[in-house]
Amino acid sequence: MTEQDRIGVALNGVRKSYGALQVVHGIDLTIRDGDFVVFVGPSGCGKSTLLRMIAGLEEVTDGEIAIKGRDVTDLDPSERGIAMVFQSYALYPHMSVRDNLGFGLKMARTDRAETERRVGQAAEILKIDHLLDRRPGQLSGGQRQRVAIGRAIVRKPDVFLFDEPLSNLDAELRVSMRVEIARLHRDLGNTMIYVTHDQTEAMTLADQIVILRDGRIEQTGTPRDVYENPVNTFVAGFIGSPR
Ligand code: ADP
Ligand code: MG
Image (tube, rainbow, N blue to C red; front, side):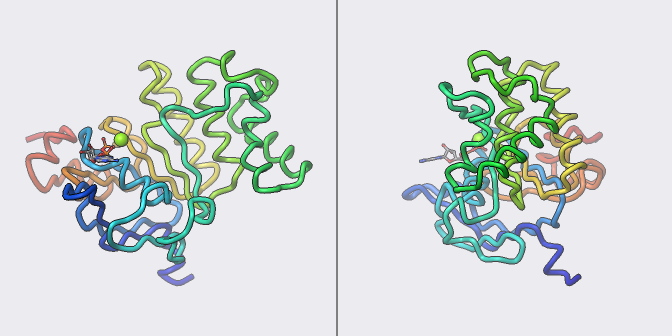
């Protein structure tokens, strides 16, 4: 295995401007294949914009993005080997859970037996087998978020992208879903990039934590590195390092 094979995602000089407003400034970042990486920082620091550029939902103004050694900068989202989970679930209200889970595969013309197999697998992993015939309106917030995650799993992506997936849940549910997501990462072993403004989520989930401020990386490392050796008072204050 070469060093190149171990790289899950690589960002090289990635910038984003909206008109004259630059919101992401020349980000260089290497993510090891299989790592759980958390982008954390205050609201408005550019976390979602960065994630959406990796997903291909937002064009880069400058720079390159590679996934597993393949330059994806100019590829459509469907060609990048990624699946994204949003805060707002984005489920189809008129479809059953089963059809919500299988919809992306149907669009990709996956055959029916394979679709059923993958939907069954995802439902089992997320413990929503008993909900397959319900509609999103008949589910709790936590159950809806499981379906949203299931929709990503059935696509067998190389990289999972999560944008504040637990922000709409109450505190107790947030903790139990956080544990579920950590388990999912252990079981699947995929690269996962997870955006949050919640320090506790970041510190408990991450193999690598990336602290962003005003569109720049302030510091990156293991949660322990960052906690024990914050580079400045912003990081120390944000992470809650002892001073
Ligand atoms: P975060 O996810 O960290 O809260 P965002 O990536 O959503 O931050 O936003 C970063 C900055 O970019 C913010 O100042 C936001 O107002 C700005 N921004 C995001 N999307 C647009 C857009 N479509 N047009 C103009 N400005 C935008
Ligand atoms: Mg955001």
